[in-house]
Image (cartoon, one colour):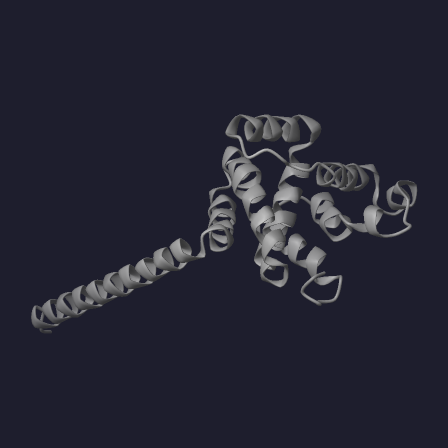
Length: 193
């Protein structure tokens, strides 16, 4: 990993995302193993012997999706790519696993060179955020978009972040003021025993 973290950190973090999404056991096992076929000498047969055919199919599906490179910035091409992605993944869990993988990669993008950051962020906003949206995973979509914006348009990202925190501070202040007023009124109108 570019972040200099031990290799195991990435699969553990991807598995945690899937646990939060309440995915099944095989998908979570596949999260721990999703880079093994590509990065080690382990064979699909060995993996199937230890973890079963479902896990192997998920790992092979994610590996296959990972080999595709998105090139065009044209929206129609992005839509074609998303459709192809869905068609290739015989099992929706493969796409969810790929989304969790991409989400953790985006969370650690700061360790990469600027050119690569922008390329991955653009691909994320064009392909992965809309896929998450299509699967009804709004929270994942929102985080993918936020993280992408941070690298594609940092000025806008920090401007929005500042506005959000100011708005939150104002909301908190208003809520606290209302709580004080209501508490005061309740105290004033307390029924005496």
